[in-house]
Length: 309
Image (cartoon, rainbow, N blue to C red; front, side, top):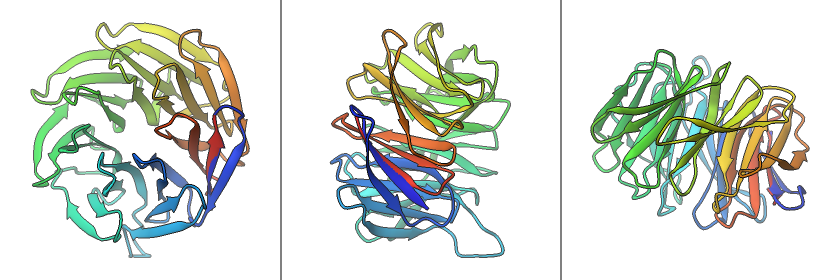
């Protein structure tokens, strides 16, 4: 089972990372752009050399063949030294990216599978969303939960920090919520999708003014984070949209779909400027390299692909 790396400008797949034995649920890129991390239904987190495609570390999240606990989500700390993962066994674990050692299990208090994680820009906090309908904010140093963001009525499948580190966005059911992570107050609800916003289906623009979401209604929506108003709907996928991400310059959005494609959009015009085709299964997760030139995607075909953009 593989990962693919794509050139975002040409749409060319520049690397395929193979090694997972289960479908790939999430991917992230290290700040230096040299490594990619993936989480899989095979209970592992893998760290890859983005240039060679070699797996340089395998982090074992679970070991019980009778009670498999697939990894649903991964994120990288800003210093590039640690990785955080969330899994079906309700846990959020922090790993040393160099040694592969688990250095902490966060005391989130989640009571169901953990579907999504994100790290604050300063690396001091980890936010997680769960099928228990809550979002938890934990202190990365102590592992203790410092805030519970409650208000969703369905499982939470996507979370992200705003650049200011104070606000968090989460998605559940058909809605996206913006929270003050310090007070726990919901400051905006973004409603407009006609179907569920799925795992990995929410991201924040670098300026913090807009949020993007992808839905099982086949669309990608861009929202004003302050007013909650929808400002654009991007149409072109022929099936459910599972995941979205924003380029570092804020000018483009990328989405992955059950239609097995990755699409790159002009955020201003809503035009699809590239379609990256090569996966043989639905695309579950996406991440963009810090230089904005490559996109990494993971899919049901058990691969991770890197594309040039």
